[in-house]
Length: 158
Image (cartoon, rainbow, N blue to C red; front, side, top):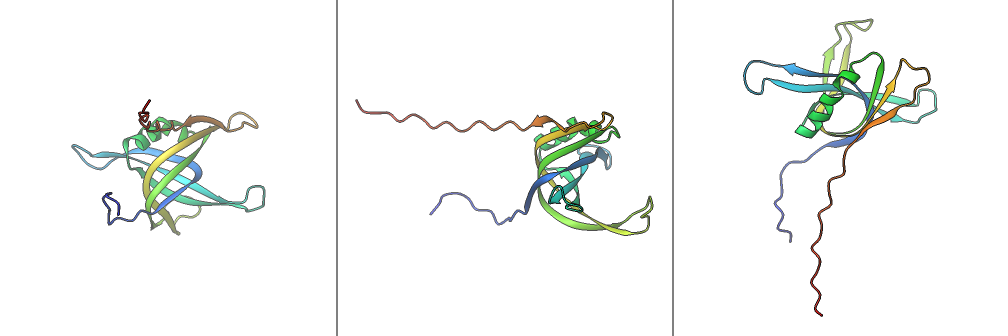
């Protein structure tokens, strides 16, 4: 039997790669805790190199901790630039679908669905400069590994 405390909470967690966009600070009122960060990530799945092989699933995320918020804030300007594509490897938790009606563009008036969730972690960021022909993604951020807990050296009897 373990002495660990158990929680009644069950997590739903997804990890993947997608394109970061619309990173922004949202203001919801006045006073303390009146702003928060939010972003859209079009997560990818499927087979590369095949027609219609890659599919995109839209996520709208809010950082769940200071580390995720800090990385999101650091790359917000690039993610909103028309000259750059920002690809991220992330972990998203506790997401749920939400429907909305599009209000702009050729699809205005159509109902769409987005998955809303908590941005738990951004582990990698790659940036592509679209203004340079044939530009390759360049890794610009990698989450530092947490230092492994060092085990105490066992005392040996001589």
